[in-house]
Amino acid sequence: MHNAVEGHRTYENLKTIRPNMGLLGQLFLNKSLTWQEFEEAVIKGHNSRQGLLRLRKPEQSIYTYPAPDCMCNA
Image 1 (cartoon, rainbow, N blue to C red):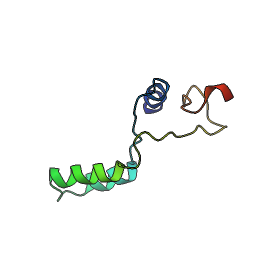
Image 2: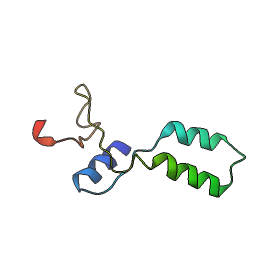
Image 3: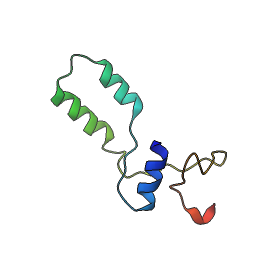
């Protein structure tokens, strides 16, 4: 479902974000973090991931992974 949301937001030229699952997993497992530390780590970890496009691999279905890449090449 997140692929469809990402594709739709890209199609509408809206800003989107690709969550860093590795970072979030480590942060969720760290029970000693305060909310402020968690929030700062998430913002810092996702700072370079906002608005970036992830191109669909040729073997991936356009229905499963709605293409944020140029549809004129499909």
